[in-house]
Length: 352
Ligand SMILES: NC(=O)CC[C@H](N)C(=O)O
Image 1 (tube, helix red, strand yellow):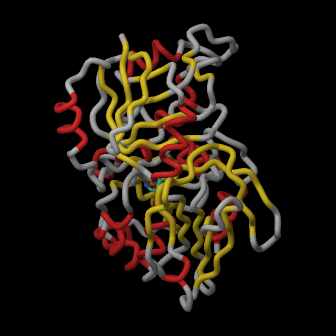
Image 2 (tube, rainbow, N blue to C red; image 1 turned 30 degrees about the vertical axis):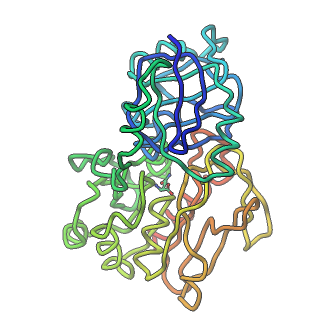
């Protein structure tokens, strides 16, 4: 079936449609050459329509082990060539079969470079995937809707759960945590208690953990005033490590500010400079917001990492407290594992 992606500025991108129309979503682009399955299942993409800039998607199929959540929360997938005949020993299913099973609307055979250039020039936009013959007035009505800014309630765990370990005990605040962050924390031997996003500071202190971890998650960090207040109460309580949304919430809790980037950083090939060592590593990223540099000036905080492409903040640490965070994804999945050492740094902090 023929379909199209329509953006809120009226631009249209034709393609072939799998699994019907999407709902309204924020259209974002991901520059990774691989990692489509992890991207589709990363809960931080909740509510978004993902365009992959790499032209061939699906060539190594899909496998259960790569899922970052039990299912995808993305609204849609926009790609160039959709490969139906994967060649990889790990492949359990083809990508079209996987998309079908998950019910993810996919527009393929699209000029994704044109979509990306549009977003890069015009900034993040709302969009929708529809059959090619959809009535214009109907598309306009859909595009006039709002994309919700707080989607954490849709992705956080409903119930607290434990992943036992022999090491220090850590409370993990789940704002939409990726499976490989859970795995990377568990690999250090820490004794994990994963709690819903709405858990209060008092309830966390009652658990008397050795450390607090703040997860990644979808949406605007400022849409979570409850979580910000909770983290503020816990700032000088125990060592803290935050990743992505966790990093942004930490900055807000410390009195800083965040803002929306023009088109975000998404992909597994984003260079970041560690300002402490001068080394540049290639990182996995998925964020549309960033910490405002001016807002943390004069605070007891040091910027530790910077994005090489646009100079924005990619990491920070508190000057006196064992509290640090990164905007990028050290757990990779997808991407290089140059930065997994940060999980050990957190482990060391929790032992002290
Ligand atoms: N991966 C994340 O945690 C994303 C954080 C936030 N939702 C952003 O887009 O900036």
